[in-house]
Amino acid sequence: MIRNVAVTTLILVASPAFAQTAPPQEAPITCASPIAPDDTERSLKQRYGKEAVVQDLPGAEGENYKGLVLFPKATDRRIEIAFTDDKARRVSGLTLRDSAKTSRWSVNDIAIGSSLADVQKANGKPFLVNGFEWDYGGFVTDWKGGALGRPLQGGCTVTVRFDKNAAAPKSLLGDGVKAASDNATLVKWAPVVTEIGVNFPDK
Image 1 (cartoon, one colour):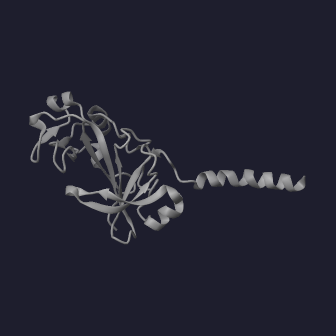
Image 2 (cartoon, helix red, strand yellow):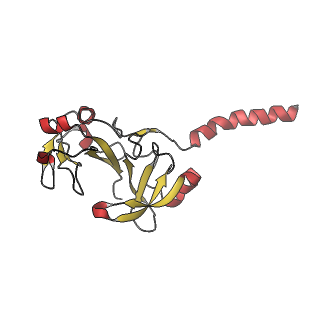
Image 3 (cartoon, rainbow, N blue to C red):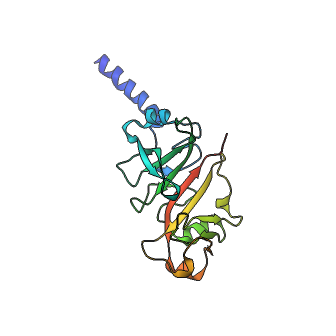
């Protein structure tokens, strides 16, 4: 009987500590959580176990790179992680994509699927978006002094990309085109956030 009480007491004491150290699976993303600037492939694998898997990830201009994916089988939790070098010694940033058309993560009140109006509200003013249907199509290029252009606490910065599963109007196509988020044609076409990046500052 005494042994059972002792074991129960140990579980009750240990449980809160375990809950605090368990890695998050959904929440607002910050510069320190669920990934910190000094994380490495090794530290993330230790923390997330089998939920951290090395994969080939899509990069710029059709190239791929080796990165780490958290929650690879849960598309609404998936996070893609890039590193500063081939030996994965330090995280350079993370990316959320619209593989599930939604995500349990958010950044500055923005999530996968957020509308132009949602992002403009979070920014506090209109912003500029690249023309669509090319390698850098749909990325926000200028927050125009709004809140989303300022680094988060901890120094990391945010990138946002818009798209839609439908052809964009001709006036919104291609390299060299910039459209304001309150542009009537863009608003009517109604793209949504399909990619969010959090980029850590260089040391």
